[in-house]
Amino acid sequence: MKKYDYLIVGAGLYGAVFAQEAARAGKKCLVIEKRNHIAGNIYTYNCEGINVHQYGAHIFHTNNKEVWDYVNQFAVFNRYTNSPVANYNGEIYNLPFNMNTFNKMWGVITPQEAAEKIEQQRKEAGITEPQNLEEQAISLVGTDIYEKLIKGYTAKQWGRDCKDLPAFIIKRLPVRFTYDNNYFNALYQGIPVGGYTKMVENMFGDTEIMLGTDYLADKEKYDAMADKIVYTGPVDAYFDYKLGTLQYRSVRFETELLDMENYQGNAVVNYTDYETPYTRIIEHKHFEFGTQPKTVISREYSAEWQQGDEPYYPVNNDQNNALYEKYKALATEEENVIFGGRLGEYKYYDMDKVIEVALQVAAAELK
Image: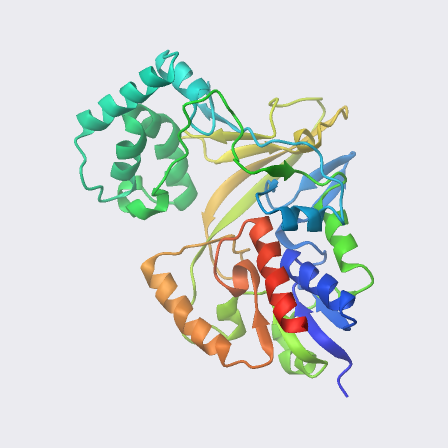
């Protein structure tokens, strides 16, 4: 007799949703997690009363009322609205590109003036069929915004010159002819009061969890413990990279506790010049309107992923997508394994989408 109905590999958001739904259906689950903490990349820890987002800024936003109602069972959300700013060599601009940005950039006042300025720069650039990211960006927002707010940041983020990046990466850019600094157009937005870790802990409830446990290091042993596996790790690692390695971008953080109340006045500041080595600075207390006497900041550096690094963003170009399709075909042959989440499906997911998909998969599986 197997001891568990489901073995869930990975204690992140997807695993937490599945565990919660399985428990409600009367199923017994064991969760094993390679790291020494739950909550995956949305893990937060307390430092001087400040909830620090260890793996980068996570702002919950969704238009899906079902998902919003679901997460509100496990946490109280505050009213945080994502309004990042860009620092270009000491010049501060609002993001996303909006009337505040255009006024600072060109001194224009009305939406018509701003639209005319962008159109003028588009025409001057003379790009009809964009061949790369640089040409695509200029054709969408003109040369000034591209040079100051896109070029350096994107080159740092991807580790390549914008001329060497495909145009499809930015098919659309958010351009708003209003004075609205809200980055997301989502109906529901906020941060869990007390941090994400507490929310995920509430989702797991009484489910048994083993931390610091590497599933792939002793796969046969763990497979024998449950009827079915829910696997949220890298899909290529599951198959021992036998078809090749999928590519990711990774991120490195330098986090500091500072003996001051307020370092930058905003939770997220992007550094869009190429010379500044980091892409942005996160000041964590502002996610929860903190009044602590100290503050915690994290400088974020984009990096080429190597095996052993934490994979963050799948590089969904034609080559990687074709390789993933081969792994996906292998995955469908694994009758007792459900592959899910950002790594299991080689897909960039916002948090609300992870929850939505996990709920759908759980409903189909547990019916």
